[in-house]
Length: 415
Image (cartoon, rainbow, N blue to C red; front, side, top):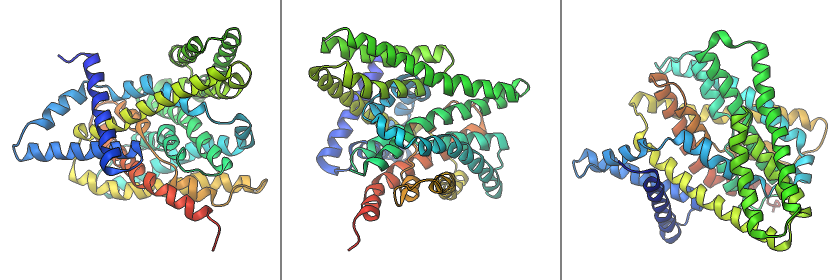
């Protein structure tokens, strides 16, 4: 029996090896390169197994099945990654984009959920893979939010304008919280249809979204008081770590949104505490610590996403449906982003090419896979999990690698 510490040690070792191979021989952005290498290793294991040249595929499956991806990400890595991402978002810049970010994270996610779900229902029926409408809506809910982990990793290296960076980062940081709430409501409707009323749905949204914001502000206030009363950079770094781990766990225990709470706490830490409660030494130490945490966990997560291919259910008919599904998700993103942005443009001027960049920059990632894995076991879950995985892999590799050139072409001065 492999222990938890042995699994963690193996994952870190694999991630470090893949990161080294990418840096030494491949040269892709670290997270994308690690995932590509992990996918290639997964394919190699399957091929060797098919030709009877080793049972690596089975051995890897046994190991990966010991790792609860849903719990590892949503209850483990996510809080650290969200906090690290929010830490460097300027609150003043965020306020200037409040309506854009709020509309994309609410109206955009809900509209996308409905459109993807409805289109998926008819597309799968046409492909001979009929799926109940509620399951299609669940797929729409889990695939609609852009993954802050995937998006932030890409945005950091692009050097885009501050307005564009804030909009992309702000949407990705907040829409996953809304997407998770929509997914939870739909999952409850699937599992407990008699207990779902309009009042219950409104209460869930209030507890999760509004409660998450309020609790995040409480965490930020507590952190500010603690950091403002001492000047010891080691203890202060430890306090920020406690805010993330303890705050996220407490938020989940209180049935409010841990992701939203951690994002709010990260914004307050990076703006208010950094300016008024930290010495220069503390600021430098906090930045270095969370940058390192962010890089390490990102590499591990993307390696894990690539290796998850080994335990993905597969069917040739599903693969035929996955290609139009990729196009469907991108096209719905055009509508769910374009409509709110065009309405806001009636009142104020926004950055040029914003819709194009937001559409192609809407990367999906580990959160979508984790939510798909949380569905009740059965044929419907297996199909949704496969489609989700294909969309995520396409999003990270194809969109992630071409987003930079697209932004450069759209924003460079015309010759």
